[in-house]
Image 1 (tube, helix red, strand yellow):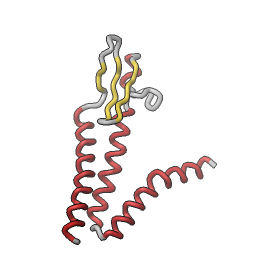
Image 2 (image 1 turned 60 degrees about the vertical axis):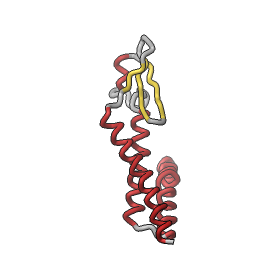
Image 3 (image 1 turned 90 degrees about the vertical axis):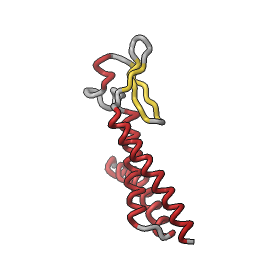
Length: 126
């Protein structure tokens, strides 16, 4: 029963939105490379954002959570995605480095650029 629920969740969360974007894009006549770049960058944005915002949560990654060993309170920020440890003095210290944030912003920028490119491409075609 759990496998069926997992399969339905994967279908609802990943397969359906991807298929809808692909089918609507092909119906409008967008090139395959544009749709593929948009979908890959979009999913990378989603997964990188989730990982950045949840990295400090000890219940998800108990042994590797940066806040677990310091006995501090984790704080999540969802946009822009980041995780912090709140220390005794009330200071928030990020647990994500600049490279991880750069990967998120590069993927997010590519996603928006592909959507903008599709609009320009569509207007020039009409």
